[in-house]
Length: 324
Ligand code: TXA
Ligand code: MG
Image 1 (cartoon, protein in one colour):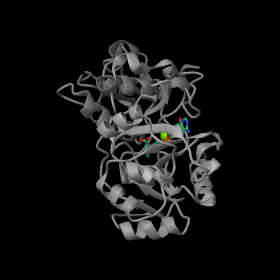
Image 2 (cartoon, protein in one colour):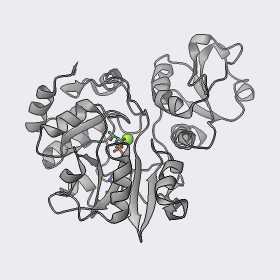
Image 3 (spheres, helix red, strand yellow):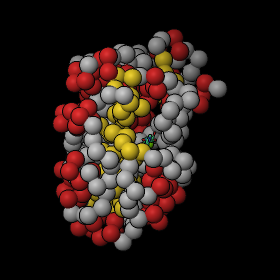
């Protein structure tokens, strides 16, 4: 069983010797390995049971450190980075040869990110290689936002989990690439579209890739982020629960309380309707209710703005399998 702790030296030693280690970031926990060591990278894929066609993000301590792995940054990429790095921004950029093809699933581009978490930043400063790290969940399951979530899902398979507490953002990074001086958004994430638009102008954002099916970016599957319990995304909660045994369902809302459903099966994400707080707590709430072995989990659709858009994207994917 994985040890859980805050010992950076232990993490450094394991990573240097080609092992995987779970690391905290401000978005979700990652399952990290030396990005320059092919067999360590393969261990990430096998531990997660993730298809090798799904490329990994490499994590670095600074933009300067990134220069060794990507071709020159365009002025637009530098502008975004100056505002959002370190932070929940992942940039897909033409790679240098040193980045193994296993990391990028054979693509000519590599995704880079500078995570904003003190433990992981200090870990990254103590090694001389980048960390390839997908979210530390078994493929298709909800991403972990605490060390305990990682232990519950992958604890049997990994030696160490660096414990950085509950992730501050609670949703994965926003992924972008660049095309003809515009920003192509590959994945909605912890940076809201409105915040990107404020920096680069809404006319410079390309959003075509965000549809649920057939996205440009490999790995953006229509089903993902799913609990084991069937999850329903609903705009009409009171009505949709009518055919269920109300003692055996879980409810996640922004703020609403549902009469006749046990209080211990209900989670309100933000009493003040704050979508950032709601995003921070969403996966934690899904993990919590999934552990209760209920018949179903109903999640109220969030307002379609800011972080609410990201939450709805994840919830649609989490519910996808059940609509077939
Ligand atoms: O917040 C996050 O981004 C977390 C933390 C751990 O950093 N990581 C994460 O990784 O969410 P993962 O592997 O679960 O999702 C990364 C996604 C891939 O599924 C793929 O869609 C996209 O990033 N991606 C990675 N490399 C890419 C590339 N070269 N071209 C296009 N898309 C890429
Ligand atoms: Mg993931």
